[in-house]
Every structure is written in structure tokens, then in C-alpha cells.
Image (cartoon, rainbow, N blue to C red; front, side, top):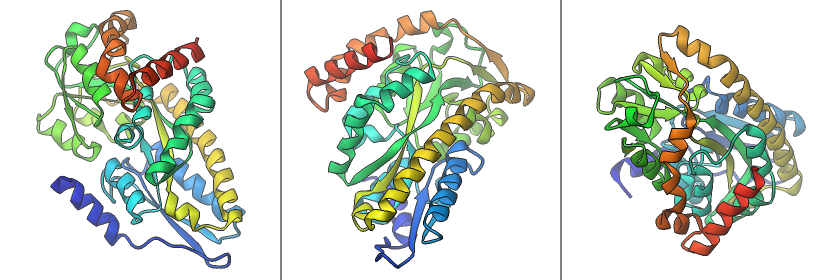
Length: 335
């Protein structure tokens, strides 16, 4: 484990010990995110906390720690595993390191619209992948969303894949993301999101890719001139609770948390959809030059990702045949 990751884990340990309540004791759950307080993750987390407090008559309290206060997304997931943190709402970027099948959702241009996403995530495929989390000390409380991702940079407007040539672009810590950006001619650099603004400001990197809600709430328009509405990835998110924490909860509190999570998921998805409708204009008003590239050349440029043996094997958790079956199942579901 690297120095930065150890730092994140130590931060989690100092945040406090896991609470294992009796049926009468108050349950205090700490939930960390890597996004800014105004981001939809944290608005949803706040709503989730309100619902569980109301349903439990105050016996369940949620404390939200935004902006990577408790470490990077990967740090926080590891915190759930070791029992130093109860909950996190995270993108799927780091999740492939824990459950390889999650990499399926990182394939470029996999989904055509939100409804096709929800059919997969809330159906058999999403449920089967979520069930795998328990084996690594995690429990999924539902698929939330980060939304469709778009590319920003400080060099030039992006209209064609050739415009990506040589751009040093930050990506999440996932080999499918890395390979996708390489296929577009860019130079991908995995980096924790908490480091991105400074790296862009200092010109260590030229570009990054994220949904509009992240771009705007993180004020990336201050350090990025160009925004290309590529929608190249749909990025799910997942609300996780430590399996150890879960097993220590009375059944009635598990039921409250499960029901509240579903309500918060629907609320968060609504916020994400609204953000996509409103934040493009907001980014333009903030000074960004926005383009709407034809997606066909981009889809063609990344086609090799789907046939890459290492990607297929990774999605299958080391089993290439399982990887092929998962990809085929999703493609059939989104038609």
C-alpha cells in the first residue's frame, strides 16, 4: 500500500471506531465521499440521513464527510473493509479493484440513455454483481449514479478523436478507463480526484473527464477552457456499508436503512438528470467553450476496447468466458 493510501487509511482510523449498537443504543454511521459538499452525492447523503433519522425516530444518525476528508474513494472503501468507516458513496472507478466484474460498467459508450442504465443496474446483472461485494467485506445498498462523463481540457476544442492526441488526461484508477483514453490518442494518468484541481491548475495534466455535476461543483471551469459533451462513459455510483457494520445492526434498523437507501437513490438520480439539463448552460456562462462532437468517430475509435483480451478477462474476474457473457448480456439488455 502506497504512502498516500496509508495516509488515507490512518485518517479513517482517527475518524473513530465502528459503532455496533444494541437494539436500544443510538446508531451513528459515518459516510464519506470524495466530492464537494454541493455535489449530488452529498445532497443525496443528506437526504438519506434525514430519512433514516425520521424512520428510526432519531435512533440512527448519519454523519457526512465530503470532499475526501476521510481519504480518496479507494481509501474509504478500504476503510469499510477494516472497520474504520461505516459507509461511503463512491463512483465505480476504484471498485474494480475489489470486485472485478464492476469493470463491466466502465466500458465506453455502453449505455445509450439513463433508462437502459437503470434496466441493467436494477435488474439481474446489477444485482448479481452487487452480491459479490459481500465476499470482500462490503454491502451494496443500491446503484446511484455519477452520470454521463464528458471531457474538459485547457488546450483546444475537442470535436474529433484526433483532437485528443497527446492530451495528458486524468482518469480514474481503472484499466478500462486507461485503455479507452489510449485508444483515443490521449495520455491517461490515473489520479485520485482530490488531486485533480491542483494538477490542472499547475499544468501537470491538460484534461480530465467527469459528469457535469462534478465539473461544476468542483469549479473546474476555473482551470479548464474547453468542454466536449462526449458522454463517453456512463458512470454508476454505489452506496456501500461495511459488512461488519451491517451484521452488527438489529434487523429493524437494517430494514430502515435499506428502504431509506432506495428513496435516496431515486432522489439522487433525479438530481443527476436535472444537473445535466442545467449545468451545461452554467458552465458556458462560467466561460467554458462547449462542443457537441459527433459520437460515431469516437465509438469507432474505442471499439477495440470491447475485444481486448485483458479487458474481457478482467471483467470476468479472470474468466474470459464469463467476461464475454457479461458483455453480451448487457448489450442485449440495452437494445
